[in-house]
Image (cartoon, rainbow, N blue to C red; front, side, top):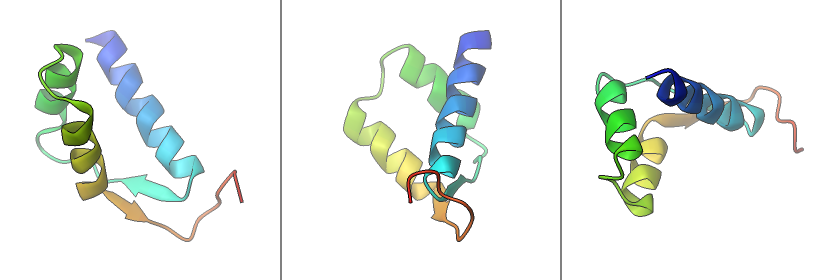
Length: 63
């Protein structure tokens, strides 16, 4: 489980650096496990991240 938590945190950090805030939904653990077990494809993961991310006006590293 350690690597899965690190991956979710790294994803959240990546989004934050690009001006987005990840809103951890109740199904976060189940989704991360499904991703690790390769039960979700890239379009499913993308939809889940978009659904649970919000644009912020905070610092963006790339702008």
